[in-house]
Amino acid sequence: MTNDCKTCPVSTGTHKPAEAVHVQIDEPQDEAMRLADECDESATHWVHEIDTRFKAAKMLRAQHARIEDLEAQHREELRAYEITVANREARIAELESQLEAIGAGWVERLRASVRE
Image (cartoon, rainbow, N blue to C red):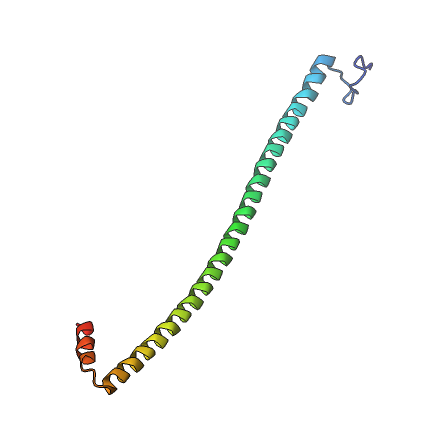
């Protein structure tokens, strides 16, 4: 058996025309290349999606940390305001008692009008 196609070996003992052998070889190779392209495209999309998710997770963690910092700061400011209010209320009570001690009777009427 002779092989008239210099690039195609004869393996079965029968030889097909060179064009038929090339078609048989080219079709699977074309399919393989198409599948390789699909794999590349899919992998590129997948990598982009994973990267996007990692970035989103990083941003969410940063925002969470920032919110925790702001909440802690808010709690500290609120405590400071509560202390300030308590100190001012104590000072007002002290001044009112001094006014009562010198006989300023209008203090009780003022308190009553504020409560109403």
